[in-house]
Length: 100
Image 1 (cartoon, helix red, strand yellow):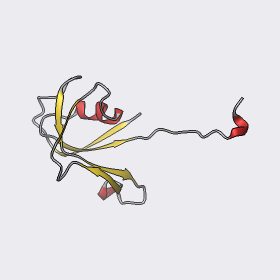
Image 2 (spheres, helix red, strand yellow; image 1 turned 90 degrees about the horizontal axis):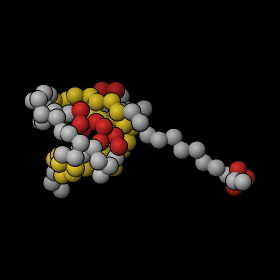
Image 3 (tube, one colour; image 1 turned 135 degrees about the horizontal axis):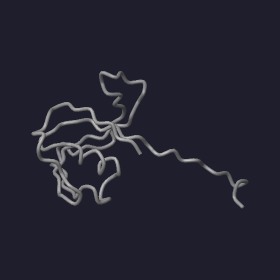
Image 4 (spheres, rainbow, N blue to C red; image 1 turned 60 degrees about the horizontal axis):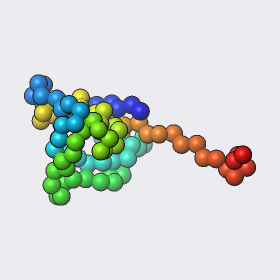
């Protein structure tokens, strides 16, 4: 899995979460849409957000959230605002004729 971080606002550059730390995150999740312009960071349909529900608190780096967050959030310093573009998994479907 790959994670690309696009920094929108710098953090303090000193305090980075370590594996197992509890982090507080305000987030919005969008599907990647190659038809959307790069100036919009290819943000497609929104599927989730913490905005209006309060910040999301979780342990990071220990499998409590999607792997892309475990990898990407640990690269962000306190106060940083960024877009994490997380590559998806490629799933190969098998037809019934392919089962042994």
